[in-house]
Length: 83
Image (cartoon, rainbow, N blue to C red):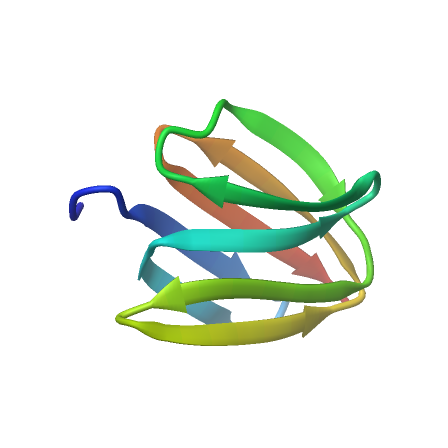
């Protein structure tokens, strides 16, 4: 894992949408938007309709979602989208 990067995995019921190192990920939580960066505290929460935004290899990317959940721990972010 690169310095100050986190491992992000985004899956839907059909496929893996992204799996790689990112600088940050911004997520639509039930209490509002929040960001995860290197060293974030462990977290498990529900995601609401909106966009996942993250920066990988210098490029900002977005993935739309209706709902899902996220698990954060040990500089790894796992997102499961529900359809």
